[in-house]
Image (cartoon, rainbow, N blue to C red; front, side, top):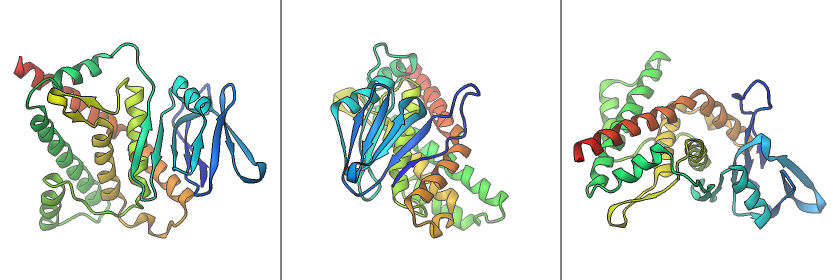
Length: 266
């Protein structure tokens, strides 16, 4: 499946930048031109993708990348996420930043706290609860809300244990990771940071997990009849467009949390 999905938000004076989904199971190769990617498929078939139109790439292990194609994406600030057959993110590429931005410096200072993992776990539980309450409110407004017992059961399983219903196709988990990475890149943030005593903060994975939970809590049985990858990708991008402010809310709350904890520590 090769899909350049419709991305609705864009400056009025230029075409919209779109996520590029390369989810085919047949072997293919990605090369580069001066300002575009060149996808080589079977029987001499070629597809060209101008990087000025691409915001992120999601692909499988069946796609072989040339060094030139990887370097072009890195140079243009287009992150790539590889997903496995179960939809889990295998790894990513992200461009290098010469100068750390204030948010990045705040994260690095926070990670010097010896007990930062405990503090971050508290923040994670807070965001999970906020996500659950937000989804429950939307469901109630749509006429299919949870009763009190059902909400408490979800609260115990998700907020405290990270377990939630899986209603969307498994591939959506990797797509959430790619979406989180895209937003982090725009904010000048890395996917992963190292902290005190070589502890690691997987920031992209943490944000992706919040998105993945919200997607499943939101969608109910919506994708049940969508058995084609391209249809699922469009469903996902439609949902992501409607919820594009959620990542900014998570990041904004994280920034406030970091500042409070650092101030208390100092």
